[in-house]
Length: 466
Ligand SMILES: [Zn+2]
Image (tube, rainbow, N blue to C red; front, top):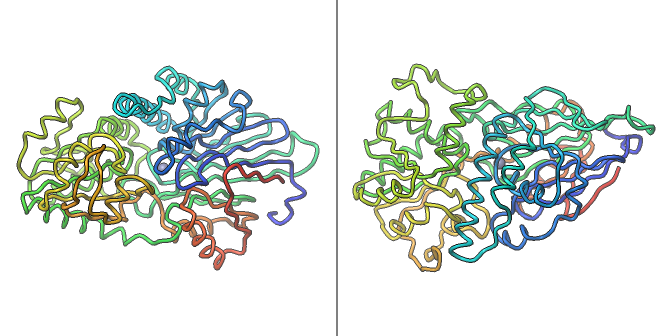
């Protein structure tokens, strides 16, 4: 069915984000009568401020619906701007994504207001816009086909990336048009890593004419998942054993919960020295509550109910510091400890305050457990820069720096290829998005050797019509 695209019903796809680096995911899908967006994410990293202030190249008032793959800010972050500029249609996502999106957008608004106060950066949306987005969200569960607008049927499948994450199968239905067959287009959103201890595996694609596929790690393969526990344990032993402080920049959603789960297990097994562990991120704390609330969407790799405390995200020496005062009180603890604080790419949040204190301490450590976008402080530290600026002050990086790729919430190139290969028939066309330029080029070559498919790397605002 994939080789006869000219016979299918009219469709136009425009890449409105997610093509300059790994952030700002936003794709406009048009039929003759309707316009829908898949994701409407914020730009992060290099040029974030400049890109995020650019106007949409479409009229938000004319968008009929939005499908949201998951709650990460680079997929949902411009929804309040869309609402502010006149969008009044419905937004569709899974129930956990709705709850997580709400706290992600609230947190972003607080951070924006704080940055505005400190550095006079713009405030792109206010709390009323965030509330409007919440009101527009309609939840739909996995595997339920839903005609979101006449002629456009949508089904969500578990992407195994974060709680509630989905890849989206859109069927443009021929029965509402005169000119021919249905067409299936699949948007990957973000595809999860393999063997994530708290999430189901990514589901298969049954078939697709067109796939829009993320490429975050399209040029590399993660170390085996089994080594993550070993590396985490060794880094904790090394730093805490040296009376240092281990800073773990937290990606509030997913990585933090996986980390808590692993720490809980290591403490149960007495695999690491006993020391205070601070969860110093309001967003992480709230997200963890949502993980508890929607635990039926999680899959654990062990029987969590045999855990002595029967709570997979909590343990006796975990200190949750929700308020600013509680956060400041961590400074009074001069002993060895672990601090998990946001933001994950060290581009804002409480981690910066802790970093100022410990980055020049050679006994301390910084453990990176997620993707670091170009231009972020996290990327500079990850790349081994020895001198960095925190806010406007210069610092030398003397703390030990380590990274665990297996903690990534994204599948590597092998996983992405396997996911694409789950299609029962050859895919007509694959578009690679959501990756750095050279990564997408490498991924295209890698996939081209394995899949006999037309593979395209679209440019910003480029459109394709069928
Ligand atoms: Zn994501």
